[in-house]
Picture 1 (cartoon, rainbow, N blue to C red):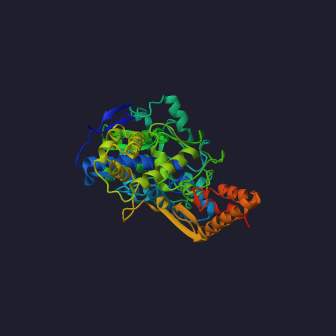
Picture 2 (picture 1 turned 45 degrees about the vertical axis):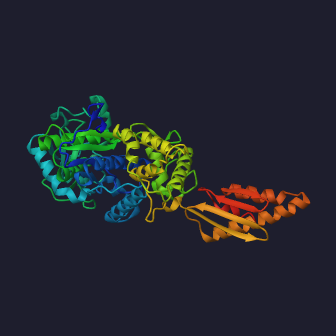
Picture 3 (picture 1 turned 180 degrees about the vertical axis):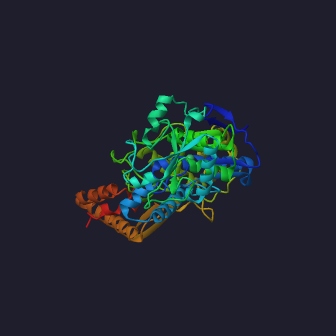
Length: 512
Ligand SMILES: [Zn+2]
């Protein structure tokens, strides 16, 4: 069976047939680096990471090239620099590293190439020059004494240079990918102002920079590229005029991807930029659009560090699991419940497969769903089946272990689960009873000590309460532990305490 992928361009699921089986090529639009990646930014990274793994598995790791760019020249970055008083280069370098760290925490493999837009300015200038020469683009000089009204850049010095614009009318197939009407496209293109546009749909290839903004010398004066040209120039440089797969979030379909196609096909004289266009759907939080104004906005780092409504530190593996539990073409809803369920499932799988040798037969369990338009939720379903313990059948845990590694849920050197899922325990004995403490992941030793002390106090208070029939303090200790996220079990010779993932030691402070 071959891989089937849904192609936005043809609106159908197609057999994937690479241009060159020895060099399968994929380009995915990457982030603009001025801030931490939010959860929505992580979705394409994780989705296309699984596709990358599937292509490497199918064609061989040395026969796949995956490119994902960093947009490090953009007005949002310039704005952030102006507001913060920091250097642009400092902001982009810092944000790029944040992105790499956060995506590594989600188990995403690094692409083969991660070009920065600023490294490909000469290639962009060449491509824009080609487009003008071939009649698909034009440049407009605006005299500083005659600024058109719609031109809103505050600093009028900008008008001393030239804009280069792509003339959309010259490219017949414009709009085919997104399937939008001309009216819709005009409305969508409205955000981008530039003087001297022949049509409102024409888009910026190059724009002049004021002295305080990043700029490069070009045939149109000192300026900087429009957003779209970088992907056309970088994919051409690294993958060639036509390549296999182009991916990104659904929000990039128009205008970004339409513009990329127009630029690349017209400059390269090709019929297609990429054969298969893949778009992941958007992300919501508890059924609502994620937005700063709704207070449900969080970054990947917020989740990793516990700064979100759930309040607990979400391991990267759990974020990955939740992202993959919905098919990439469906809207994805992040909920606290899903995160908790994913945490428990992964803990169970890691417990079951701790020290188990992986069996490559596990591939056959997840193969069908993955080859069927990257049905990652179907693959996770199959893994649930492998985890089902049926003593009448041979164990399928070695297959589960293989499938986990394949899907990007790692094990560490020495065959053990990663740190957030490793189990630890300690116990201390006293006159005929024991206090057992067990937990997963990391816990500070002062918290271990505090819990152990409370375990002893609980046992002794209870021993006295059985005589006096006054259980007030016993109940107080139990309910405080419960509030702090600690499971408590008490028997006649034992106290067992198990802090969960949401364990909050600060809530124990009320117990003096
Ligand atoms: Zn792009």
